[in-house]
Structure formats: structure tokens, C-alpha cells
Amino acid sequence: MQKELYRVLKRTVEESGLTFYREPLMGTADTGSSCITRLNSIVHSDHLLPGDILPGCRSVVAYFLPFRENIVRENRQGRSASRLWAEVYIITNRLLQKIAEKMKDRLAAKGFRCAWEKPTHNFDENLLVSYWSHKHLAFACGLGRFGKNHLLITERGCAGRLGSLVTDCHLENDQHMADTPFYSCPEGCTYCERHCPAGALGKGGIDRKACYKILLENDRLYPDLDLCDVCGKCSTGPCAVL
Ligand code: B12
Ligand code: SF4
Ligand code: SF4
Image 1 (cartoon, rainbow, N blue to C red):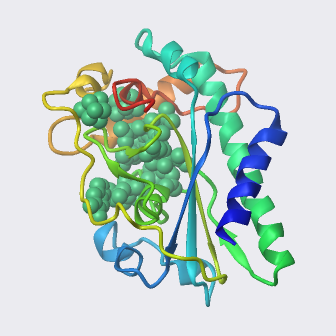
Image 2 (image 1 turned 135 degrees about the vertical axis):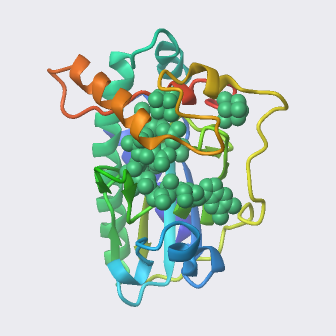
């Protein structure tokens, strides 16, 4: 079933006709694995467990759409997010929804159920914390490790977007990287800290409010686009495209 779901992922991206992405990544995890059962203690006390969105579910599927280098290169310039970065954010959020729908159809054809959370805008606007962390679920599915920029750095880099879903189909555990706690940034690299227009990184955490302020500034820059709370300067460094 893993292979079938991966084919659905690849085909949905191909059929979209969009040329923003490199080859997508997908990983799976058993909902019984410790990285998942302890979600609400490791990540956040309000974090949902997979069974909260799909009672009886057995597995998590996470996927990553890595951006092409040109999207990253354009966003490297200046203090503001590039228009292309903003557009790709909106389009990719829609595509991730589509991927989940297609996977749902494939699973349903085999008699399985599934449920998912949208790619973003499912967070508390004051705390800037969500009850569903695609990053953590992708980590549990072995898709990557965390960088100093607080993003999940996959084998194809961190510039891209993540989605995840849960299903009652049993899928084998892919969490080969889950035991390695942190991505090791190259010795001495401080690119993300230095390029953050908000100064939000580097003090042992992330200043979410300072970051969000920049994201909303960028949204105001492109009034003709749908909500595009973006920046992403911290995902234009050496770990952006691998
Ligand atoms: C709220 C939110 C924000 C907030 C807060 C960001 C933050 N870093 O906390 C704001 C609005 C500021 C923001 C900004 C951005 N965001 Co945002 N955001 C989210 C959202 C909606 C929820 C994240 C969340 O609150 N999760 C719950 C908290 C408690 O967990 P967490 O932060 O995800 O991760 C925790 C664990 O994984 C753990 N952890 C960290 N390291 C390790 C290591 C080990 C070993 C373990 C066990 C755990 C662990 O620590 C974290 C905190 O507890 C997600 C989408 C989603 N629903 O998942 C996107 C998401 C995280 N954002 C994303 C992106 C790309 C961005 C921006 C670049 C904006 C842009 N698109 O241009 C910036 C980057 C800021 C940054 N450097 O982190 C991507 C990340 C992709 C990636 N490669 O990681 C996501 C996943 C959206 C998506 N669908 O792809 N974001
Ligand atoms: S820019 Fe450098 S320090 Fe920051 S996350 Fe990437 S590799 Fe690590
Ligand atoms: S998205 Fe921009 S403001 Fe937020 S942490 Fe990254 S570089 Fe800083």
C-alpha cells in the first residue's frame, strides 16, 4: 500500500502541471510508535493524537514537496518575501489538500478510512501554536530532522511544504531517522540567524511573534493574492535544497 500511496503522491503532483517541485518524499509510521503516542507530551499538551481525528487509525503518512532551486534563489534577495515564494505557498497549500483527497480515494477503494489536517492556518493566532504538527509527524515518519532554523530538514532540504494524514490501513514503520534527535547543521553555520529579518532565531528558540509580524507584513505586500503569511528567508541557506 505504501508504494501505491507514493504513486498517488507523484501522479497528483505531475498531473497538477506545476513545475515548482522536485521529487516528493513520503514516509509512514505506526500510530503505536513512541514518537506518535507521546505527541502530546513531546510536542505540546494540546496536540491531538491520530485517534482523535480518526478513531481506530493505525498509521500516519507524511509527505514533503521540495521546492525547486529557482524558487529559493528568488526568495534569497532582499528583506521581503518574493512574489513567487508567496504564490507557491498558496498553490502548494491547495495541492497538499488535493493529495490528501486523492490518497483518501485510493485508501477507500481498498476499504480503508483516512483523515487529515489542512497544511496550515490551523493554529492559535495568539500563541502561534497548532494542535497538529505536520513537522513532528513527518519527523516520526522518518522524513527528516530539525535544524537551527526550527524547520524539518529532509534529505531534499527544508525549502518546501509538508502534509500528513492518518489511516486505519496498517503501514510499515519508516521511522529510521526518528532516533537521531537533531539535524546537524554544518559547523559554525549561522545563515538562518543572520538572514532572519525579525531576529527571531538563535536564542535557543524561535520568537514566534516577531516572525509572524514579518509574515503579515509580507502578506500586505501582495494584496492581490490570497492570504500569504510568508517569509522563508531562513529556508534559503545551505540546508534549503539538498
Ligand atoms: C504555527 C506555525 C507557524 C508559526 C510558528 C512557527 C514555529 N516555528 O513555531 C509562524 C506563523 C511564526 C510560522 C512561521 C513559519 N512557518 Co509555519 N507553521 C505553523 C503551523 C501551522 C503549526 C506549527 C505548530 O505550532 N506546531 C505545534 C508545535 C508545538 O510543534 P512544532 O513547532 O511543529 O514542532 C515541535 C516539535 O517538532 C519539537 N521538536 C523540535 N525539534 C525536535 C527534535 C526532536 C528529537 C523531537 C522529538 C521534537 C522536536 O519542537 C517543536 C516545538 O515543540 C505549521 C503547520 C502545521 N499545522 O503543522 C506550519 C509550518 C511549521 N510552517 C512552515 C513554514 C515553511 C513556515 C515559514 C518558513 C513561513 C513561510 N512559509 O514562508 C516560517 C518559518 C518559521 C520558522 N523558522 O520556524 C512549514 C514547515 C516546513 C518545514 N520544512 O519544516 C509548516 C509545517 C507548514 C507546512 N504545511 O509545510 N509558522
Ligand atoms: S541555515 Fe545553517 S544553521 Fe540554519 S538550519 Fe540551515 S544549516 Fe542549520
Ligand atoms: S520565516 Fe523569516 S522571520 Fe520567520 S524565522 Fe524565518 S527568516 Fe525569520
